Length: 427
Ligand SMILES: Cc1ncc(COP(=O)(O)O)c(C=O)c1O
Image (cartoon, rainbow, N blue to C red; front, top):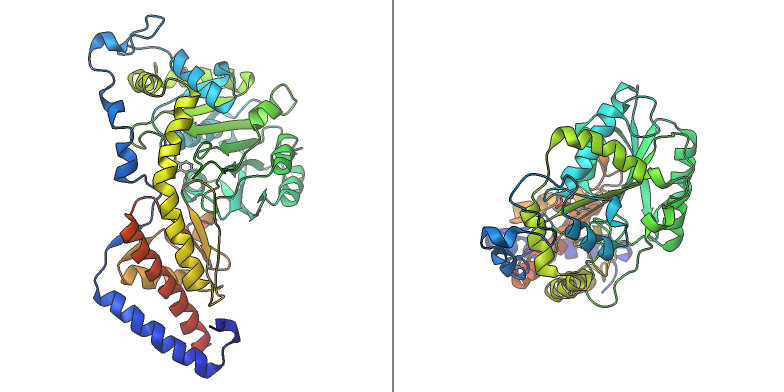
C-alpha cells in the first residue's frame, strides 16, 4: 500500500470512500468503549483482593512497636511502612512522609503550601509574588496542569525528547527567570509517552542552577516499579544523587501504590530533604493528627518487603503487556502503512502516546466519540488544553478487556485516517 502522502488526488478520494464506508459500519454497530483514563482493570484490582481481609480485628492493628493503628498519631506514617518504601525506592525512611491514598493530593497540597507559606529559600509566599511560573514538559499529565491552572500558576510548555524534557531549554529558562518556581516531571514511563529519563537527564536535573532560590522539581515517580516485563527501563535515583548536595532542597519526590494495590485505597508518599521536611511538618501538624495507618499496615503485612512489591508488579505486567501489544500491533498494521502517525512503544507505565497528522487530533477525537469510543480529550496533554500542533492523543490500554481494546484501537485508527483524508481532500 502507498503512503497517504504519496497518493494522487484520485487515489486519496478512493481511499476516503473506503475509510468512510468502514466508519459508517462502525457507527452502525453502536459501540460504547472507554479508553480515557489510566485505570487498573478488574483483573488487576483482583490481584490484591486479600489485602482487604488482612486485618480483621483490633488486635491485628498493632505494629511491632505496639502502636495501635486504630488510634491517633504517627504524623508521617507508620515506621514499618516508611521503611518498606525506603527500601523500594532507595530513599532514607526519615525523609519520607506517607499520606492518604493519593499522591496527586500530596502534589496539590505541596504546591498550595508553597503558595500560602513559601518554601525554604523563599522571601515570601509564592501567592504574594506578581507571577509564578512552572515549566511543563509536554505532552504531559493533564492533572499536573490542572493544579497549576487551579492555583493561578502560569505554565510554560517545554518539549519532551526521547531522553526526557529538553534540558537545554530547561537549564536556560530556570537560569534566567526568577519567577519560574517549579517543573513537573514524570521521570519513569512518563504520562503519556512512556519515556524514561536518561541518566544524563537525571544528572542535569540534580545539578540545575536556578535564578530562583526557591525553585522546586516536582518529581512524580508514579510508575517507578511498573514494568511490563523483565526488560523494563532503569531510572537513576535522583534522591540519592541530590542528597547532601547544595541542591538537595530543590527536590519534592512523589510516589504511590495506586497502581500497585488500589487507586481508591493505596498509600501515597512525599520524600524531601531534612530542611523541607521540617518546614512541611510545621504546616502538616496544623492540618492533621495523622494519616490512615490501618491501610498502611495492611500494605506492610500484605507485601512484607520491597521484593514482595516487585514480585507483585510482575503479575500486573502479565495483565498489561498483552494489552499494550494489541494497541501497538494494531497501530503498526493499520496506521503504519498509511504513514500518517507516530506512536510510542513503552516498556511500562499506563499509556501510549499517539501523534496523528498535524491538525487532526481534535477531529480524530470527535469522530471516535461519535462512534462510541471515548479517549482522553485531544489537547489535554498540553498546558491549558492547547496542543500547538493538534496532533497528540493519549491511549490508555489498561481498563478495557482485550476484545474491547482491539475494537477501540481499530476505531481510533479509522478515525485518524478519516480526519487526515477529510483534511487533505478539502484543503
Ligand atoms: C503521572 C501520574 N501521577 C499521579 C497519578 C495519580 O496518582 P495518585 O493515584 O497517587 O493520586 C497518575 C494517575 O494516572 C499519573 O499518571
